[in-house]
Amino acid sequence: MRELNIQFIDQYKIVDCFIRDAYKSEEGVSEYIKIMEQNDAEGKEMVVSWGSDHRSLKHLRWLRNKLAHEVGFDSDLCTKSDLACLSAFDERLRSAEDPLSKLMKAKEAKRQLAEQRKRELAEQRQQQVRTSRKSETVAAAERQNKKTIWQRIKDFFFDES
Image (cartoon, rainbow, N blue to C red; front, side, top):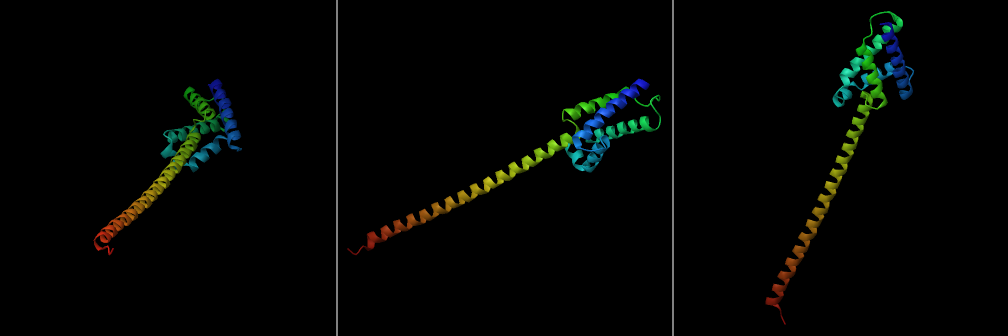
């Protein structure tokens, strides 16, 4: 078990350092968890794995803290599954497939969709205005045309020459 615990701690340090650098924070994994908690409502709505990722990270941090501050490396605390979970999270971080990256991408996609809808609505309004103006112009021309025809009929019958 000692070897597994050491591998876990080494992997945790790598993940923690990566997060500290990426988020310019001294807290690493704890900072990542804090940001997840600040964005929990949106995260649950927009990222399928949000809840399970959050629970996993809290468990992994708990394991690290237990190993570092309480039970030591000779305990049977860490499992191969824990190490695999931490390694998988590290890979997801580096490929921008982690929960916060996914949330950021989802927010950006939502913003772009809203902008596109806004442009489409503005274009529809402009088209309606153009159509309305064109209809008014056609109606005015038809009125003028009818007036001219009636004027011609009047002139034909009542021409004084």
